[in-house]
Image 1 (cartoon, rainbow, N blue to C red):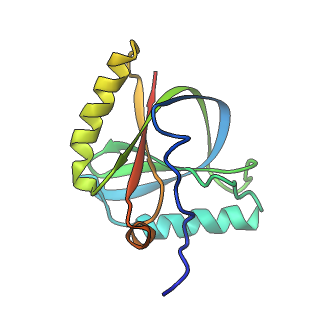
Image 2 (image 1 turned 180 degrees about the vertical axis):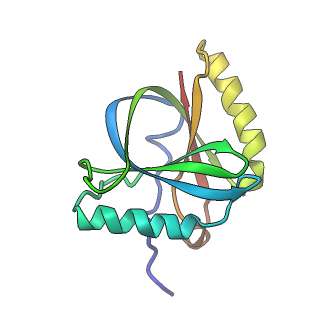
Length: 154
């Protein structure tokens, strides 16, 4: 059995929390999708990881966010410890409500509805959602859990 490439995810610090970021640096790339199903995600992640490693900018958390802004693609953001000069960088600021979900990706529509309800129950108005994919599919299978954190910017 091969060594997992993703650290095992602990949902406790992320479930039903409020987090604030001020100019948190992320390396950014774009994934091509077909009806939100990513087609080149592994290649995009390899490209991102190579730039992070070359710049020695890998973070401890390894937060991988997706902005599912089109049926045909998504922006991917991976947190880094410092800006990388030869990479597209995005700095995310704001207040986010978080909620952890576990299960197969086909539950995403239900999870989004649950997150929208959670934001409303907290007395907030939703501005944007990011999806934090905590492990790759191979590691999720090894760990027996497929966690996804939805971050709702309020």
